[in-house]
Image (tube, rainbow, N blue to C red):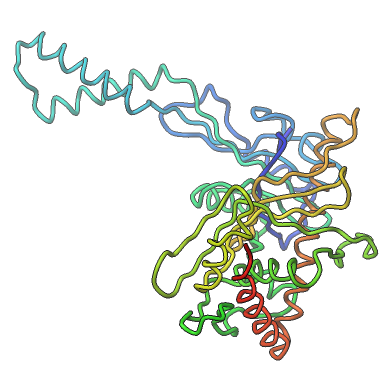
Length: 374
């Protein structure tokens, strides 16, 4: 099934259109070709949620308990560069021996390389890469595996083309506008450092939020309640930070990025120095804990709100594959809802200019006080 393994990574999107069984015909058109058809040009297409090479596109294989699931597969043949270089050298040597030459020209080199590449390519097994995708049809929320920018762009184009549904990435700035009507463009640059020489910067709303979240966890209350979705608002969850952590600052001099890991980096002198210099928290591992059997954790990218290395409670013993997948997806949703609930709390502060200014001052005092931590 998709999203296998003990930890997963995904970017959250929302879609404006309904995802219903009507799209099965479109998905069928975008079905991945068979590997037998693979030649020099890569092939792309959709496979089902059951396993990577399953090309059976049906309601049963693609829709699971209100989720539309599948993988976007890319198959290609690659010749390892070192192997190609070595065989080309050998072929050139044999050519010179046969022709009694002391060297070869550029044209001969190009012809030999092209011939060797074509022969090796036919011998190479296919290389498979995929992006697992799950859409909550009820909430129009999409979880797509995190990869590089090229794969992200390819996924967004393929999903929109297939489903006819526009994807909106839930990055901090778009999420703030959607949930609270806050335009990031209207906000001023800000620094949380008490050092007068630290320049205010505007490096992303997510960095302001994640730095505020660390402040909140240390000075306000390390517990919180989920105020969105269908979750019980009376249940409290503990919030905790763990390594590794990364601080960023787009302005000023010195190091642009500070990454800390092992030990207790949040309390380290390097963390204090980063905050004092005006850097903001850009990546961190956070955990939500109810009890020893109910814990959720992920590494959060503050600039994109991508969730990496997500770990959620395991499904109960005896649950079948489809049941385990649905349970994991619902746990992903829980984690996202919990995270967004904390973001909503931050947005409420941000909406009130006076409260936000007071919060900035409190954060500056908090950072200054942290300089005395051992």
